[in-house]
Image (cartoon, rainbow, N blue to C red; front, top):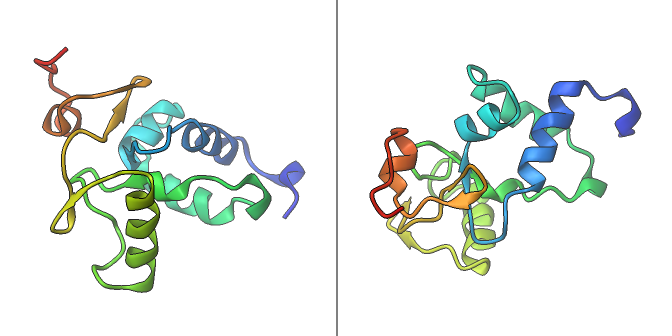
Length: 124
């Protein structure tokens, strides 16, 4: 797929996803907000699906707002995403990402709950 005929929304989403550092994750909502699409987190998955392979986007770093992988637990997509995240040092507690791996405003949040609920981080 040529990136010449891609819409601007996809480009913005790809730019945000490509900026997520290894070992960090962002929720679909965080990616949408960072791309200027505050009320459109559902635009993230289709944009990632349309991304050309040559971009090598770190799609695995985008997770649900609840700190979980969006694929059904045990599915091939789930297992692949979890494997890639674990290779980057992300730790899981059951099906949830454990600890403070959420990325916000270009820095590690220190508090997953603070990021999920947009509250001030007391570690900060």
